[in-house]
Length: 150
Image 1 (cartoon, rainbow, N blue to C red):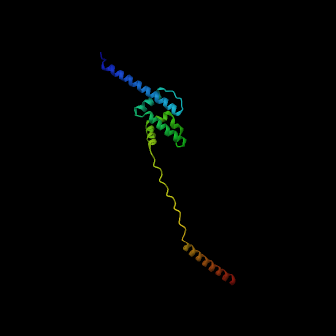
Image 2: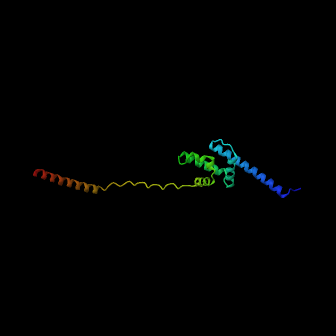
Image 3: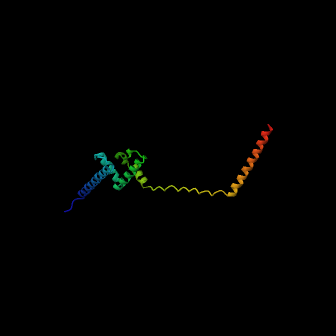
């Protein structure tokens, strides 16, 4: 004897509700474990988790975002409030954080190493030295002439 269609639908609906309810409780427990918090699972929080699952997010996504946020908080790039459940489960922001956590930034281009300058050519140094010596000799001569004129 088979059940009428409306009873079958109710049975499937009841099973889906149990699955959702179990998934919500499991996610909430994982969140509490990963953030070292103890939060009761009241109706408003159940609804947030339900919307989280309905949006297609998973426990792996939650773990990835929590790990990313904790790293950012330690580096003082984010506020500790980012881990609050009411902030975390704002789905648009969660999705953005999830996407940012997946971004692979290119390492900065290596700076060119300064090349050691070759030693100046010895001839140039000798030439410069001779010019300076000549200028000094001329300057001394001018000083002597001016000194004897006074």
